[in-house]
Length: 210
Length: 379
Image (cartoon, rainbow over all chains, first blue to last red; front, side):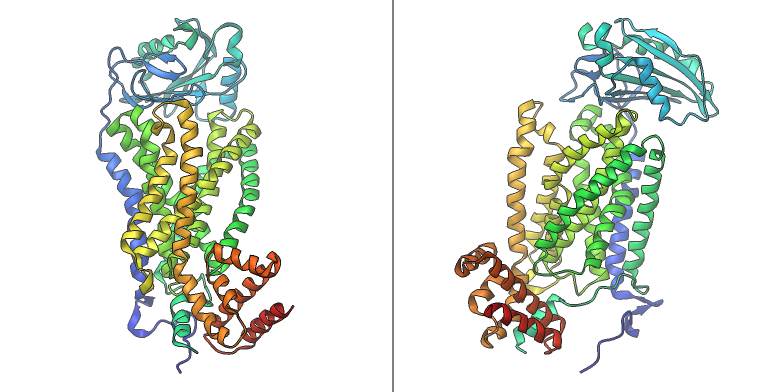
Protein backbone atom coordinates (compact mmCIF):
# COMPACT_ATOMS: atom_id res chain seq x y z
CA UNK A 1 0.00 0.00 0.00
CA UNK A 2 1.34 3.46 -0.97
CA UNK A 3 1.77 5.86 1.95
CA UNK A 4 -0.33 9.04 1.86
CA UNK A 5 1.64 11.95 0.31
CA UNK A 6 2.98 14.61 2.68
CA UNK A 7 0.81 17.69 3.21
CA UNK A 8 0.90 20.04 0.26
CA UNK A 9 2.70 17.63 -2.06
CA UNK A 10 1.45 18.10 -5.62
CA UNK A 11 2.18 15.27 -8.08
CA UNK A 12 4.36 16.53 -10.95
CA UNK A 13 1.73 15.82 -13.60
CA UNK A 14 -0.68 18.18 -11.80
CA UNK A 15 1.73 21.09 -11.37
CA UNK A 16 1.52 24.35 -13.26
CA UNK A 17 4.07 26.97 -12.21
CA UNK A 18 4.21 25.16 -8.88
CA UNK A 19 0.44 25.41 -8.35
CA UNK A 20 -1.93 22.48 -8.17
CA UNK A 21 -3.80 22.87 -11.42
CA UNK A 22 -6.67 20.64 -10.19
CA UNK A 23 -7.67 23.56 -7.96
CA UNK A 24 -7.64 26.21 -10.68
CA UNK A 25 -11.24 25.50 -11.68
CA UNK A 26 -12.92 26.47 -8.36
CA UNK A 27 -10.47 29.32 -7.82
CA UNK A 28 -10.99 30.88 -11.24
CA UNK A 29 -14.74 30.32 -11.10
CA UNK A 30 -14.97 32.20 -7.80
CA UNK A 31 -12.69 34.98 -8.99
CA UNK A 32 -14.62 35.32 -12.27
CA UNK A 33 -18.09 35.39 -10.70
CA UNK A 34 -16.94 37.78 -7.96
CA UNK A 35 -15.50 40.20 -10.50
CA UNK A 36 -18.68 40.02 -12.59
CA UNK A 37 -20.80 40.77 -9.52
CA UNK A 38 -18.58 43.65 -8.37
CA UNK A 39 -17.54 45.28 -11.62
CA UNK A 40 -20.24 43.94 -13.97
CA UNK A 41 -22.98 45.62 -11.95
CA UNK A 42 -20.93 48.83 -11.78
CA UNK A 43 -20.31 48.76 -15.55
CA UNK A 44 -24.02 48.16 -16.17
CA UNK A 45 -24.83 51.07 -13.90
CA UNK A 46 -22.32 53.28 -15.71
CA UNK A 47 -23.80 52.62 -19.16
CA UNK A 48 -27.42 53.25 -18.14
CA UNK A 49 -28.05 56.99 -18.04
CA UNK A 50 -30.37 58.67 -15.57
CA UNK A 51 -33.60 59.57 -17.28
CA UNK A 52 -36.09 60.55 -14.65
CA UNK A 53 -36.28 64.32 -14.77
CA UNK A 54 -38.66 66.16 -12.49
CA UNK A 55 -41.57 67.75 -14.31
CA UNK A 56 -43.79 70.72 -13.61
CA UNK A 57 -46.37 69.67 -11.02
CA UNK A 58 -44.19 66.98 -9.39
CA UNK A 59 -44.29 66.89 -5.60
CA UNK A 60 -41.72 65.07 -3.45
CA UNK A 61 -43.09 62.68 -0.83
CA UNK A 62 -41.39 63.29 2.53
CA UNK A 63 -43.63 60.81 4.34
CA UNK A 64 -46.90 61.08 6.29
CA UNK A 65 -48.15 63.82 3.98
CA UNK A 66 -45.13 66.11 4.29
CA UNK A 67 -44.05 67.34 0.87
CA UNK A 68 -41.68 69.57 -1.07
CA UNK A 69 -41.74 70.83 -4.64
CA UNK A 70 -38.60 70.00 -6.64
CA UNK A 71 -37.12 72.31 -9.25
CA UNK A 72 -38.13 71.27 -12.78
CA UNK A 73 -35.65 69.37 -14.98
CA UNK A 74 -33.49 67.86 -12.23
CA UNK A 75 -32.80 64.11 -12.13
CA UNK A 76 -34.65 62.34 -9.33
CA UNK A 77 -31.96 59.81 -8.39
CA UNK A 78 -33.50 58.63 -5.15
CA UNK A 79 -36.82 59.17 -3.39
CA UNK A 80 -40.48 59.09 -4.23
CA UNK A 81 -43.00 61.45 -5.75
CA UNK A 82 -46.47 61.88 -4.29
CA UNK A 83 -48.83 59.49 -6.07
CA UNK A 84 -46.05 57.38 -7.64
CA UNK A 85 -46.82 53.90 -6.35
CA UNK A 86 -46.58 52.42 -2.90
CA UNK A 87 -43.53 54.27 -1.62
CA UNK A 88 -44.18 53.68 2.08
CA UNK A 89 -42.01 56.71 2.78
CA UNK A 90 -41.51 57.51 6.44
CA UNK A 91 -40.68 61.07 7.54
CA UNK A 92 -38.00 59.68 9.88
CA UNK A 93 -36.16 57.83 7.12
CA UNK A 94 -37.08 59.57 3.87
CA UNK A 95 -34.18 60.02 1.49
CA UNK A 96 -34.40 62.08 -1.68
CA UNK A 97 -31.60 62.97 -4.05
CA UNK A 98 -31.91 65.43 -6.92
CA UNK A 99 -29.03 66.12 -9.28
CA UNK A 100 -28.34 68.52 -12.09
CA UNK A 101 -24.98 69.19 -13.78
CA UNK A 102 -22.62 70.09 -10.93
CA UNK A 103 -25.27 70.32 -8.23
CA UNK A 104 -26.83 67.78 -5.86
CA UNK A 105 -29.66 68.35 -3.41
CA UNK A 106 -30.22 65.72 -0.75
CA UNK A 107 -33.16 65.67 1.65
CA UNK A 108 -32.89 63.30 4.61
CA UNK A 109 -35.55 62.68 7.22
CA UNK A 110 -34.54 61.71 10.76
CA UNK A 111 -35.88 61.10 14.26
CA UNK A 112 -34.81 63.92 16.53
CA UNK A 113 -36.29 65.41 19.67
CA UNK A 114 -35.43 69.08 19.87
CA UNK A 115 -35.35 72.22 17.79
CA UNK A 116 -34.20 72.56 14.18
CA UNK A 117 -31.13 74.43 15.37
CA UNK A 118 -30.22 71.67 17.85
CA UNK A 119 -30.68 69.16 15.05
CA UNK A 120 -28.24 71.07 12.85
CA UNK A 121 -25.78 71.12 15.76
CA UNK A 122 -26.13 67.33 16.03
CA UNK A 123 -25.52 66.97 12.27
CA UNK A 124 -22.45 69.18 12.54
CA UNK A 125 -21.11 67.15 15.47
CA UNK A 126 -20.83 64.00 13.34
CA UNK A 127 -19.86 65.61 10.04
CA UNK A 128 -16.40 66.12 8.64
CA UNK A 129 -16.37 69.81 7.72
CA UNK A 130 -12.70 70.51 8.09
CA UNK A 131 -12.42 71.45 4.43
CA UNK A 132 -15.38 73.83 4.44
CA UNK A 133 -15.90 77.31 5.86
CA UNK A 134 -19.37 77.83 7.31
CA UNK A 135 -21.36 81.00 7.03
CA UNK A 136 -23.59 82.58 9.64
CA UNK A 137 -26.54 80.43 10.73
CA UNK A 138 -29.83 82.18 9.94
CA UNK A 139 -33.52 81.46 10.38
CA UNK A 140 -35.61 80.42 7.43
CA UNK A 141 -39.40 80.31 7.31
CA UNK A 142 -41.14 78.26 4.63
CA UNK A 143 -44.35 79.31 2.92
CA UNK A 144 -46.23 76.86 5.17
CA UNK A 145 -44.78 78.49 8.28
CA UNK A 146 -42.12 75.91 9.18
CA UNK A 147 -39.27 77.65 10.94
CA UNK A 148 -35.86 76.19 10.15
CA UNK A 149 -32.23 77.15 10.19
CA UNK A 150 -29.86 77.52 7.26
CA UNK A 151 -26.13 77.90 7.01
CA UNK A 152 -24.00 78.13 3.91
CA UNK A 153 -20.58 76.60 3.50
CA UNK A 154 -17.76 77.01 1.07
CA UNK A 155 -14.67 74.90 0.42
CA UNK A 156 -12.13 74.01 -2.24
CA UNK A 157 -14.41 71.31 -3.66
CA UNK A 158 -17.40 73.63 -4.03
CA UNK A 159 -20.14 75.50 -2.24
CA UNK A 160 -23.39 74.56 -0.63
CA UNK A 161 -25.73 74.91 2.27
CA UNK A 162 -27.30 72.90 5.04
CA UNK A 163 -30.82 73.56 6.21
CA UNK A 164 -32.69 71.88 9.03
CA UNK A 165 -36.43 71.85 9.70
CA UNK A 166 -38.82 70.16 12.10
CA UNK A 167 -41.86 68.89 10.19
CA UNK A 168 -44.44 70.60 12.40
CA UNK A 169 -45.20 74.08 13.60
CA UNK A 170 -45.83 75.53 17.03
CA UNK A 171 -45.56 73.47 20.19
CA UNK A 172 -45.49 70.16 18.24
CA UNK A 173 -42.28 71.10 16.47
CA UNK A 174 -39.75 69.71 18.96
CA UNK A 175 -41.25 66.19 18.94
CA UNK A 176 -41.79 66.12 15.16
CA UNK A 177 -39.47 64.36 12.67
CA UNK A 178 -36.54 66.43 11.46
CA UNK A 179 -35.55 67.12 7.88
CA UNK A 180 -32.04 67.92 6.74
CA UNK A 181 -31.47 69.50 3.34
CA UNK A 182 -27.92 69.43 2.04
CA UNK A 183 -26.99 71.21 -1.18
CA UNK A 184 -23.59 70.78 -2.84
CA UNK A 185 -22.46 72.49 -6.01
CA UNK A 186 -19.23 72.63 -7.96
CA UNK A 187 -17.09 75.73 -7.33
CA UNK A 188 -18.79 78.85 -8.67
CA UNK A 189 -22.07 77.07 -9.44
CA UNK A 190 -24.12 77.85 -6.34
CA UNK A 191 -25.39 81.24 -7.49
CA UNK A 192 -26.74 79.67 -10.65
CA UNK A 193 -29.11 77.46 -8.63
CA UNK A 194 -29.85 79.82 -5.73
CA UNK A 195 -33.41 80.67 -6.82
CA UNK A 196 -34.35 77.04 -7.42
CA UNK A 197 -32.92 75.98 -4.05
CA UNK A 198 -34.74 78.83 -2.34
CA UNK A 199 -38.02 77.77 -4.00
CA UNK A 200 -37.55 74.16 -2.88
CA UNK A 201 -36.84 75.16 0.74
CA UNK A 202 -39.82 77.49 0.75
CA UNK A 203 -42.12 74.72 -0.55
CA UNK A 204 -41.46 72.28 2.33
CA UNK A 205 -44.82 71.53 3.90
CA UNK A 206 -45.72 69.45 6.97
CA UNK A 207 -48.68 67.12 7.02
CA UNK A 208 -50.79 69.45 9.17
CA UNK A 209 -50.62 72.23 6.61
CA UNK A 210 -51.98 70.16 3.69
CA UNK B 1 -13.36 -4.22 6.31
CA UNK B 2 -16.55 -4.41 4.20
CA UNK B 3 -16.83 -2.89 0.74
CA UNK B 4 -19.61 -0.60 1.98
CA UNK B 5 -17.37 0.58 4.81
CA UNK B 6 -14.47 1.23 2.45
CA UNK B 7 -16.76 3.09 0.06
CA UNK B 8 -18.18 5.22 2.91
CA UNK B 9 -14.68 6.10 4.10
CA UNK B 10 -13.56 7.06 0.60
CA UNK B 11 -16.67 9.07 -0.28
CA UNK B 12 -17.28 10.85 3.02
CA UNK B 13 -13.76 12.12 3.63
CA UNK B 14 -14.52 11.91 7.35
CA UNK B 15 -11.42 12.25 9.46
CA UNK B 16 -9.48 14.04 6.74
CA UNK B 17 -7.54 16.85 8.42
CA UNK B 18 -8.12 20.42 7.27
CA UNK B 19 -5.20 22.73 6.61
CA UNK B 20 -5.92 26.38 5.81
CA UNK B 21 -2.51 27.49 4.51
CA UNK B 22 -1.98 25.80 1.13
CA UNK B 23 0.58 27.80 -0.80
CA UNK B 24 0.32 25.67 -3.95
CA UNK B 25 -3.48 25.87 -4.06
CA UNK B 26 -4.93 28.70 -6.22
CA UNK B 27 -8.15 28.55 -4.17
CA UNK B 28 -6.16 29.61 -1.11
CA UNK B 29 -4.86 32.72 -2.90
CA UNK B 30 -8.31 33.67 -4.21
CA UNK B 31 -9.61 33.29 -0.65
CA UNK B 32 -6.87 35.62 0.60
CA UNK B 33 -7.64 38.15 -2.17
CA UNK B 34 -11.35 38.09 -1.28
CA UNK B 35 -10.92 38.36 2.47
CA UNK B 36 -8.08 40.91 2.10
CA UNK B 37 -10.13 43.14 -0.20
CA UNK B 38 -13.13 42.66 2.09
CA UNK B 39 -11.08 43.72 5.11
CA UNK B 40 -10.02 46.89 3.28
CA UNK B 41 -13.67 47.55 2.39
CA UNK B 42 -14.71 46.92 5.99
CA UNK B 43 -12.08 49.34 7.27
CA UNK B 44 -13.10 52.03 4.78
CA UNK B 45 -16.76 51.56 5.68
CA UNK B 46 -16.34 51.74 9.44
CA UNK B 47 -13.42 54.18 9.67
CA UNK B 48 -15.68 57.28 9.66
CA UNK B 49 -17.66 55.72 12.52
CA UNK B 50 -14.72 55.80 14.91
CA UNK B 51 -15.31 58.91 16.98
CA UNK B 52 -18.79 60.20 16.19
CA UNK B 53 -20.49 56.78 16.09
CA UNK B 54 -18.20 54.77 18.36
CA UNK B 55 -20.92 54.23 21.01
CA UNK B 56 -23.24 52.63 18.43
CA UNK B 57 -20.44 50.63 16.84
CA UNK B 58 -19.02 49.29 20.10
CA UNK B 59 -22.38 48.35 21.56
CA UNK B 60 -23.38 46.76 18.23
CA UNK B 61 -20.24 44.62 18.10
CA UNK B 62 -20.65 43.49 21.72
CA UNK B 63 -24.36 42.69 21.40
CA UNK B 64 -24.05 40.77 18.15
CA UNK B 65 -20.97 38.89 19.41
CA UNK B 66 -23.12 37.67 22.32
CA UNK B 67 -25.92 36.91 19.87
CA UNK B 68 -23.49 34.70 17.93
CA UNK B 69 -23.10 32.29 20.88
CA UNK B 70 -26.49 30.54 20.75
CA UNK B 71 -26.25 30.36 16.96
CA UNK B 72 -22.92 28.53 17.13
CA UNK B 73 -24.34 26.10 19.69
CA UNK B 74 -27.38 25.46 17.47
CA UNK B 75 -25.22 24.84 14.39
CA UNK B 76 -22.86 22.61 16.36
CA UNK B 77 -25.87 20.54 17.37
CA UNK B 78 -26.92 20.18 13.73
CA UNK B 79 -23.39 19.32 12.62
CA UNK B 80 -24.16 15.81 13.87
CA UNK B 81 -23.21 13.64 10.91
CA UNK B 82 -20.24 15.24 9.18
CA UNK B 83 -18.53 16.85 12.20
CA UNK B 84 -16.72 19.25 9.89
CA UNK B 85 -13.47 20.57 11.40
CA UNK B 86 -13.79 23.88 13.24
CA UNK B 87 -11.09 25.45 11.06
CA UNK B 88 -13.05 24.73 7.90
CA UNK B 89 -16.24 26.21 9.36
CA UNK B 90 -14.32 29.26 10.59
CA UNK B 91 -12.91 29.73 7.08
CA UNK B 92 -16.47 29.78 5.75
CA UNK B 93 -17.66 32.13 8.50
CA UNK B 94 -14.90 34.66 7.74
CA UNK B 95 -15.62 34.49 4.01
CA UNK B 96 -19.30 35.22 4.70
CA UNK B 97 -18.57 38.07 7.11
CA UNK B 98 -15.69 39.82 5.37
CA UNK B 99 -15.35 38.83 1.69
CA UNK B 100 -18.98 38.16 0.73
CA UNK B 101 -20.21 41.26 2.58
CA UNK B 102 -17.56 43.90 2.06
CA UNK B 103 -15.74 42.72 -1.08
CA UNK B 104 -18.71 41.65 -3.21
CA UNK B 105 -22.17 42.49 -1.84
CA UNK B 106 -21.65 46.07 -0.72
CA UNK B 107 -20.33 47.52 -4.01
CA UNK B 108 -22.50 45.21 -6.13
CA UNK B 109 -25.65 46.11 -4.20
CA UNK B 110 -24.95 49.85 -4.48
CA UNK B 111 -24.55 49.58 -8.24
CA UNK B 112 -27.54 47.32 -8.84
CA UNK B 113 -29.84 49.40 -6.62
CA UNK B 114 -28.95 52.44 -8.73
CA UNK B 115 -29.64 50.44 -11.89
CA UNK B 116 -33.14 49.61 -10.62
CA UNK B 117 -33.66 53.26 -9.75
CA UNK B 118 -32.74 54.28 -13.28
CA UNK B 119 -34.72 51.54 -15.01
CA UNK B 120 -37.83 51.35 -12.82
CA UNK B 121 -37.87 54.84 -11.33
CA UNK B 122 -36.98 55.79 -7.75
CA UNK B 123 -40.37 54.95 -6.19
CA UNK B 124 -40.60 51.44 -7.67
CA UNK B 125 -36.92 50.85 -6.93
CA UNK B 126 -37.54 51.90 -3.35
CA UNK B 127 -40.33 49.32 -3.06
CA UNK B 128 -38.76 46.40 -4.93
CA UNK B 129 -35.03 47.20 -5.29
CA UNK B 130 -33.81 45.37 -2.19
CA UNK B 131 -35.58 42.14 -3.11
CA UNK B 132 -34.37 42.30 -6.71
CA UNK B 133 -30.78 42.93 -5.64
CA UNK B 134 -29.87 40.97 -2.51
CA UNK B 135 -30.94 37.47 -3.64
CA UNK B 136 -28.62 37.77 -6.64
CA UNK B 137 -25.57 39.49 -5.17
CA UNK B 138 -25.71 38.13 -1.65
CA UNK B 139 -26.71 34.51 -2.24
CA UNK B 140 -24.06 34.19 -4.96
CA UNK B 141 -21.36 35.96 -2.96
CA UNK B 142 -21.96 33.59 -0.06
CA UNK B 143 -22.23 30.55 -2.35
CA UNK B 144 -18.81 31.39 -3.79
CA UNK B 145 -17.37 30.74 -0.34
CA UNK B 146 -18.61 27.15 -0.56
CA UNK B 147 -16.98 26.72 -3.99
CA UNK B 148 -13.69 27.99 -2.56
CA UNK B 149 -13.94 25.56 0.36
CA UNK B 150 -14.39 22.74 -2.14
CA UNK B 151 -11.10 23.91 -3.65
CA UNK B 152 -9.47 24.13 -0.22
CA UNK B 153 -10.83 20.86 1.18
CA UNK B 154 -12.10 18.71 -1.70
CA UNK B 155 -12.25 15.54 0.40
CA UNK B 156 -14.14 17.19 3.24
CA UNK B 157 -16.82 19.02 1.26
CA UNK B 158 -18.69 16.19 -0.45
CA UNK B 159 -22.41 15.97 0.24
CA UNK B 160 -25.47 18.22 0.27
CA UNK B 161 -25.35 18.00 4.06
CA UNK B 162 -21.80 19.42 3.99
CA UNK B 163 -23.16 22.25 1.83
CA UNK B 164 -26.04 22.80 4.24
CA UNK B 165 -23.80 23.08 7.33
CA UNK B 166 -21.02 25.11 5.67
CA UNK B 167 -23.63 27.36 4.03
CA UNK B 168 -25.19 28.03 7.43
CA UNK B 169 -21.80 29.11 8.80
CA UNK B 170 -21.07 31.32 5.77
CA UNK B 171 -24.54 32.85 6.09
CA UNK B 172 -24.11 33.37 9.82
CA UNK B 173 -20.86 35.27 9.20
CA UNK B 174 -22.62 37.44 6.62
CA UNK B 175 -25.57 37.99 8.95
CA UNK B 176 -23.58 39.08 12.00
CA UNK B 177 -21.28 41.44 10.10
CA UNK B 178 -24.27 42.87 8.23
CA UNK B 179 -26.07 43.38 11.54
CA UNK B 180 -23.21 45.56 12.80
CA UNK B 181 -23.33 47.43 9.50
CA UNK B 182 -27.05 48.07 10.08
CA UNK B 183 -26.31 49.34 13.58
CA UNK B 184 -23.93 51.89 12.09
CA UNK B 185 -26.36 52.83 9.31
CA UNK B 186 -29.19 53.31 11.80
CA UNK B 187 -27.02 55.53 13.99
CA UNK B 188 -26.12 57.65 10.96
CA UNK B 189 -29.80 58.04 10.07
CA UNK B 190 -30.30 59.93 13.32
CA UNK B 191 -26.93 61.68 12.96
CA UNK B 192 -25.59 60.05 16.09
CA UNK B 193 -28.36 61.15 18.47
CA UNK B 194 -29.24 58.58 21.15
CA UNK B 195 -26.91 55.90 19.79
CA UNK B 196 -27.44 53.22 22.42
CA UNK B 197 -31.18 53.25 21.95
CA UNK B 198 -30.67 53.12 18.19
CA UNK B 199 -28.40 50.05 18.58
CA UNK B 200 -30.87 48.28 20.86
CA UNK B 201 -33.71 48.78 18.39
CA UNK B 202 -31.61 47.31 15.55
CA UNK B 203 -30.51 44.45 17.81
CA UNK B 204 -34.10 43.58 18.72
CA UNK B 205 -35.35 43.71 15.13
CA UNK B 206 -32.41 42.05 13.38
CA UNK B 207 -31.96 39.55 16.18
CA UNK B 208 -35.48 38.20 15.78
CA UNK B 209 -35.41 38.45 11.98
CA UNK B 210 -32.11 36.56 12.05
CA UNK B 211 -34.01 33.31 12.67
CA UNK B 212 -35.03 33.38 9.01
CA UNK B 213 -32.17 35.29 7.50
CA UNK B 214 -28.81 34.64 5.87
CA UNK B 215 -27.93 31.44 7.77
CA UNK B 216 -31.20 29.86 6.60
CA UNK B 217 -31.00 31.19 3.02
CA UNK B 218 -27.38 30.05 2.61
CA UNK B 219 -27.94 26.63 4.16
CA UNK B 220 -30.66 25.94 1.56
CA UNK B 221 -28.72 27.62 -1.29
CA UNK B 222 -25.46 25.77 -0.56
CA UNK B 223 -27.22 22.41 -0.16
CA UNK B 224 -28.63 23.16 -3.64
CA UNK B 225 -25.16 23.94 -4.99
CA UNK B 226 -23.90 20.57 -3.72
CA UNK B 227 -26.83 18.71 -5.29
CA UNK B 228 -26.04 20.45 -8.59
CA UNK B 229 -22.34 19.58 -8.38
CA UNK B 230 -23.03 16.01 -7.19
CA UNK B 231 -19.62 15.36 -5.68
CA UNK B 232 -20.66 11.86 -4.64
CA UNK B 233 -22.59 9.82 -7.21
CA UNK B 234 -25.77 9.27 -5.15
CA UNK B 235 -25.91 12.97 -4.24
CA UNK B 236 -26.15 14.34 -7.79
CA UNK B 237 -29.67 15.76 -8.14
CA UNK B 238 -29.45 18.60 -10.60
CA UNK B 239 -33.11 19.61 -10.71
CA UNK B 240 -33.50 19.49 -6.94
CA UNK B 241 -30.32 21.53 -6.55
CA UNK B 242 -31.45 24.28 -8.91
CA UNK B 243 -34.84 24.34 -7.20
CA UNK B 244 -33.22 24.67 -3.75
CA UNK B 245 -31.07 27.59 -4.97
CA UNK B 246 -34.11 29.33 -6.49
CA UNK B 247 -36.20 28.74 -3.36
CA UNK B 248 -33.45 30.28 -1.18
CA UNK B 249 -33.32 33.30 -3.51
CA UNK B 250 -37.10 33.58 -3.48
CA UNK B 251 -37.20 33.49 0.32
CA UNK B 252 -34.58 36.25 0.40
CA UNK B 253 -36.63 38.28 -2.10
CA UNK B 254 -39.91 37.81 -0.24
CA UNK B 255 -38.37 38.77 3.10
CA UNK B 256 -36.70 41.89 1.71
CA UNK B 257 -39.79 42.98 -0.23
CA UNK B 258 -42.47 41.86 2.23
CA UNK B 259 -43.73 45.44 2.54
CA UNK B 260 -44.15 45.81 -1.22
CA UNK B 261 -45.71 42.33 -1.52
CA UNK B 262 -48.27 43.43 1.07
CA UNK B 263 -49.32 46.14 -1.37
CA UNK B 264 -49.31 48.92 1.19
CA UNK B 265 -51.74 47.13 3.51
CA UNK B 266 -50.24 47.74 6.96
CA UNK B 267 -51.59 44.65 8.75
CA UNK B 268 -50.55 42.42 5.84
CA UNK B 269 -47.04 43.85 5.95
CA UNK B 270 -46.81 42.56 9.54
CA UNK B 271 -48.64 39.26 9.02
CA UNK B 272 -46.87 38.23 5.80
CA UNK B 273 -43.29 37.95 7.10
CA UNK B 274 -44.01 36.61 10.58
CA UNK B 275 -47.10 34.46 10.18
CA UNK B 276 -46.68 33.28 6.58
CA UNK B 277 -43.05 33.46 5.47
CA UNK B 278 -41.45 32.42 8.75
CA UNK B 279 -43.30 29.08 9.17
CA UNK B 280 -42.98 28.27 5.46
CA UNK B 281 -39.25 28.98 5.47
CA UNK B 282 -38.62 26.91 8.61
CA UNK B 283 -40.64 24.02 7.15
CA UNK B 284 -38.62 24.15 3.91
CA UNK B 285 -35.37 24.39 5.91
CA UNK B 286 -36.12 21.17 7.79
CA UNK B 287 -37.32 19.48 4.59
CA UNK B 288 -34.01 20.34 2.90
CA UNK B 289 -32.03 19.30 5.98
CA UNK B 290 -33.75 15.95 6.05
CA UNK B 291 -33.07 15.22 2.38
CA UNK B 292 -29.54 16.62 2.49
CA UNK B 293 -28.66 14.24 5.32
CA UNK B 294 -29.66 11.09 3.40
CA UNK B 295 -26.15 10.42 2.05
CA UNK B 296 -24.46 11.07 5.40
CA UNK B 297 -26.90 8.77 7.15
CA UNK B 298 -26.06 6.05 4.63
CA UNK B 299 -22.35 6.49 5.37
CA UNK B 300 -22.96 6.24 9.12
CA UNK B 301 -24.92 3.07 8.60
CA UNK B 302 -22.28 1.54 6.33
CA UNK B 303 -19.51 2.32 8.81
CA UNK B 304 -21.34 0.80 11.77
CA UNK B 305 -23.01 -2.23 10.19
CA UNK B 306 -20.02 -4.55 10.87
CA UNK B 307 -20.25 -3.46 14.51
CA UNK B 308 -23.80 -4.87 14.67
CA UNK B 309 -22.49 -8.25 13.61
CA UNK B 310 -19.78 -7.95 16.28
CA UNK B 311 -22.40 -7.12 18.93
CA UNK B 312 -21.03 -3.64 19.71
CA UNK B 313 -24.04 -1.81 18.24
CA UNK B 314 -27.56 -3.16 18.30
CA UNK B 315 -30.03 -2.72 15.46
CA UNK B 316 -32.12 -0.12 17.27
CA UNK B 317 -29.08 2.01 18.04
CA UNK B 318 -27.89 1.75 14.43
CA UNK B 319 -31.28 2.99 13.26
CA UNK B 320 -31.17 5.84 15.76
CA UNK B 321 -27.63 7.02 15.03
CA UNK B 322 -28.10 6.86 11.26
CA UNK B 323 -31.74 7.91 11.26
CA UNK B 324 -33.95 10.94 11.44
CA UNK B 325 -35.28 12.82 14.43
CA UNK B 326 -38.27 10.49 14.66
CA UNK B 327 -35.89 7.49 14.85
CA UNK B 328 -33.97 9.08 17.71
CA UNK B 329 -37.26 9.89 19.43
CA UNK B 330 -38.41 6.28 19.06
CA UNK B 331 -35.08 5.10 20.48
CA UNK B 332 -35.46 7.41 23.47
CA UNK B 333 -38.91 5.95 24.14
CA UNK B 334 -37.58 2.44 23.68
CA UNK B 335 -34.84 2.99 26.28
CA UNK B 336 -37.06 5.04 28.55
CA UNK B 337 -34.23 7.45 29.25
CA UNK B 338 -33.51 10.56 27.24
CA UNK B 339 -30.05 10.95 28.75
CA UNK B 340 -28.99 7.35 28.14
CA UNK B 341 -30.27 7.46 24.54
CA UNK B 342 -28.34 10.68 23.90
CA UNK B 343 -25.13 9.21 25.31
CA UNK B 344 -25.42 6.00 23.29
CA UNK B 345 -26.24 7.82 20.04
CA UNK B 346 -23.32 10.19 20.54
CA UNK B 347 -20.95 7.34 21.42
CA UNK B 348 -22.03 5.38 18.33
CA UNK B 349 -21.45 8.52 16.24
CA UNK B 350 -17.97 8.80 17.77
CA UNK B 351 -17.22 5.19 16.82
CA UNK B 352 -18.33 5.77 13.21
CA UNK B 353 -16.05 8.80 12.94
CA UNK B 354 -13.10 7.02 14.52
CA UNK B 355 -13.50 4.09 12.10
CA UNK B 356 -13.50 6.55 9.19
CA UNK B 357 -10.55 8.52 10.55
CA UNK B 358 -8.56 5.32 11.04
CA UNK B 359 -9.55 4.30 7.50
CA UNK B 360 -10.84 0.97 8.81
CA UNK B 361 -7.73 0.12 10.85
CA UNK B 362 -8.24 -1.10 14.41
CA UNK B 363 -6.34 1.77 16.03
CA UNK B 364 -6.26 2.46 19.80
CA UNK B 365 -8.75 5.31 19.25
CA UNK B 366 -11.20 2.97 17.48
CA UNK B 367 -10.78 0.41 20.24
CA UNK B 368 -11.40 3.10 22.85
CA UNK B 369 -14.51 4.40 21.09
CA UNK B 370 -15.79 0.81 20.89
CA UNK B 371 -15.01 0.20 24.57
CA UNK B 372 -16.76 3.43 25.53
CA UNK B 373 -19.88 2.37 23.64
CA UNK B 374 -19.85 -1.04 25.31
CA UNK B 375 -19.35 0.60 28.72
CA UNK B 376 -22.37 2.82 28.15
CA UNK B 377 -24.51 -0.06 26.92
CA UNK B 378 -23.67 -2.13 29.99
CA UNK B 379 -24.15 0.76 32.42
